[in-house]
Amino acid sequence: MKISLASALRPVLFAALRFTFLVMLLVSSSALAAQNAANIAAGKRLYHEHCEQCHRPEARGDGAKRPALRDDTIGVISDADLEKFIRNGDRRKGMPSWSGLPLEQRQQLIAYLRSLK
Ligand code: HEC
Image (cartoon, rainbow, N blue to C red; front, side, top):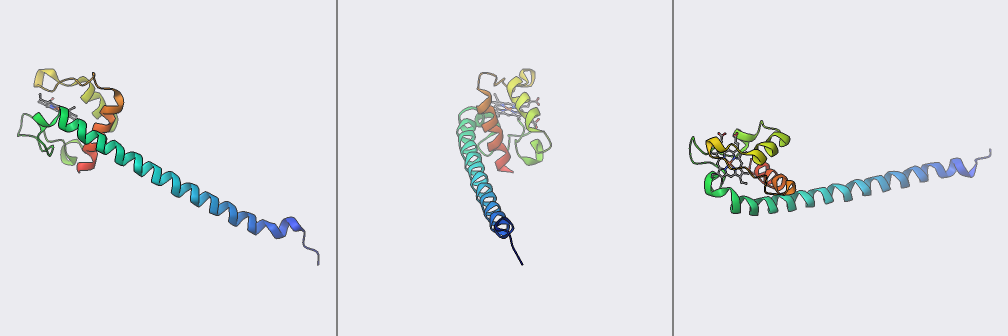
């Protein structure tokens, strides 16, 4: 019986490919997790600087006028809609516009608020 070199090597090749794929997956998911943690930390600083005076330190709001920004209030709002609301504000009801902040910072604020649950 004659076995060609190519067919003998095939399982080894597939194992090597699977291993490479797994390593790439692990590296990219931990990079994503690190990026997310950095966004949350930056968002927290921004929140304390710009938002906590109204929405309170724990983002629980201060009653009916200034809403809590936790999962039970903003949980159903998409990231895109939240970003738009924060950008435009609602001056008539006392929420300032944050269009002066770069988009990246509004996204970091959202990452922080999402992390509060
Ligand atoms: C001067 C007070 C004030 C500051 C500062 C402020 N907000 Fe608000 N915010 C409000 C008020 C008042 C409302 C309610 C507006 C309404 O009912 O339309 C509100 C509403 C919101 C909502 C909508 C909540 C919902 O359930 O619909 C979000 C999101 C929000 N603020 C995010 C922020 C973020 C992020 C910051 C900081 C960058 C910030 N706010 C700073 C007063 C403030």
